[in-house]
Image 1: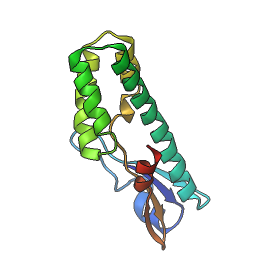
Image 2 (image 1 turned 180 degrees about the horizontal axis):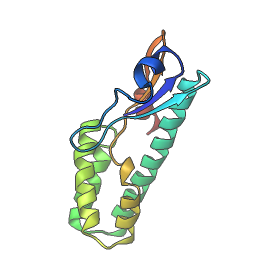
Image 3 (image 1 turned 120 degrees about the vertical axis):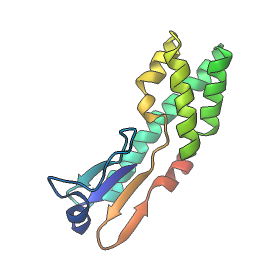
Length: 146
């Protein structure tokens, strides 16, 4: 999860220094939280979403190209499963683990390129928090981008 917050009540309750309510899970993963000083968090959050989508599209393009050029059956299966689950949070999480595993066991150029971008394998949810207005979820725009 990535959170684009606007300065205001939500930043006071959702991110006052020196502590924050956002924490990590047992795997050490948790939300990335950023504050926008100028109340432009919708644009800020949308920019975050566009950036993540661009990196994920780069991964998809690399996998599609590798599938055309001939790779191991294990890698084909992992790439195809990831591509089928690209916009599914839980599905991409499971598929990403398989992609990372096969890439770590390979010495190919494509494996290195994918491992360099592995932080973008799992589909992210991008939220823009708006004080006193409500909550806007930009995650829906992700399906439009692909």
